[in-house]
Length: 202
Image (cartoon, rainbow, N blue to C red; front, side, top):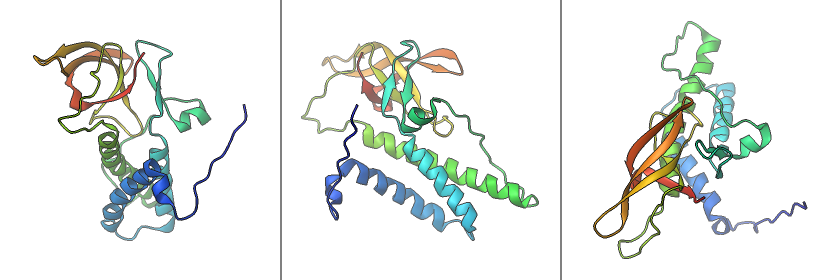
């Protein structure tokens, strides 16, 4: 397979709308975050920015349905590392008596804060928005979606399969039953479509 690179012209950021949108979201989150943190060392800042790069690059590309019961998300890092899940420890307390370890914990706290805000804005941007006069295709049984789960740890995405739809009187789907796999356990939830981001159909 031949790889072909296509480059945009210099000073033409309008030609890469989706990429520029991600840059805008990232900067909007980073500006107040870094402004509210005092005296970051160069090493801490570089480590934090590496975590930010990992978060932004780990956004889902498409759902992989190798297991129809529990589809996983394909992302750029998963293509490189061949790993789909990475566990992150959540730090909520910094013990300043342990200087080196506290710097690492500070980075993790900043990264977790960035992840929470970035995930929310990223999912909002991915969710289809239209005027009331424009109709969108209804979600249907078997569709694979992302759930806006506030309890997810960093770089983890809640992928679900729609089991059942509940049409309103006008025939539009506003509520569905969706199955996800959490901690190797299958769970079924009823959610409004505003809490879901469509990925693909079977």
